[in-house]
Image (cartoon, rainbow, N blue to C red; front, side, top):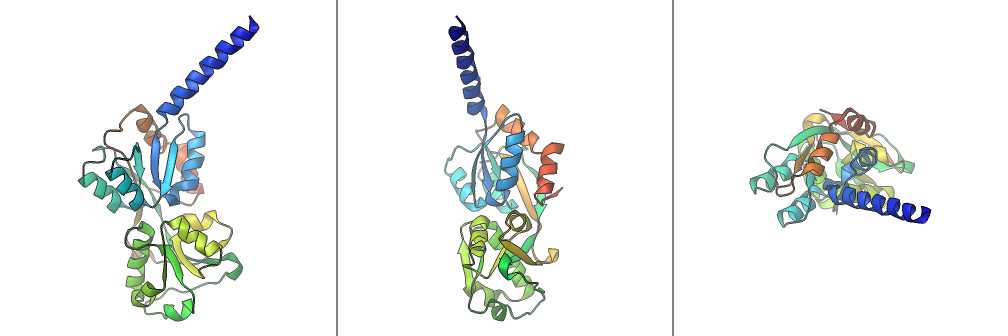
Amino acid sequence: MHRLVRALVAAAALCVASQAAAQAPLVYAAASLTDALEEISAKLPLPARFSFAASSILARQIENGAPADIFASADGEWADYLAARGRLVAGSRVSILSNRLVLIVPADRARNVELVRGMDFGALLGRGRLATGDPAHVPVGRYARTAFEWLGVWPAVEPRLARAASVRAALALVERGEAPFGVVYATDAAASPRVAIAAMFPAESHPDIAYPFAIVAGRDGPGARAFLAGLQSPAALAIFRRHGFAVE
């Protein structure tokens, strides 16, 4: 009898777990959100599943029918791209986070760099390359290109780029010492003990770094709504702040 009861209880628990897994939203999120979102998800009543990559890659996948419930972008342009194609639920978009753009170096080669207009950035690089997201489509690379244009040094920087597929891929190149400098977000630099911040780019050198979140068209449901609301809860915002994001 006791075995039967235990079996019934186990079956009921499995059923509940299966229902919860089925309701857990699939979030396509910018790579720079990895650590914060995984921690938040673990502490919310309804966990999520994640696919982390460059916002551009995720947006293209959603455009082509990928089963994402929520899109979390590292810039407004890719959210606008999907909205213009009817791929986001109207009225679901929120933007609660911002970030800073930083120049990083390997931690064992820590130094300070003064970012001033007209500086000789080529001499700073020496024979090395600068790692950042590919400016053709990765948000951090686009911010970096704008910042270097503002500094007046983009012609010297562009041919020396190590074009990474995401901000975390760029971070890894500097962590391994394969690039002496990189441009990432402040939160990525803070997440790695193997890099050091050499400089922060002036806020006026690039557009504000904002993170729009929105529900994907055709995927609106209780799970997506609950998770999106949970991201705006005081507990979630506190986690975002601890990871270095500014909360709007």
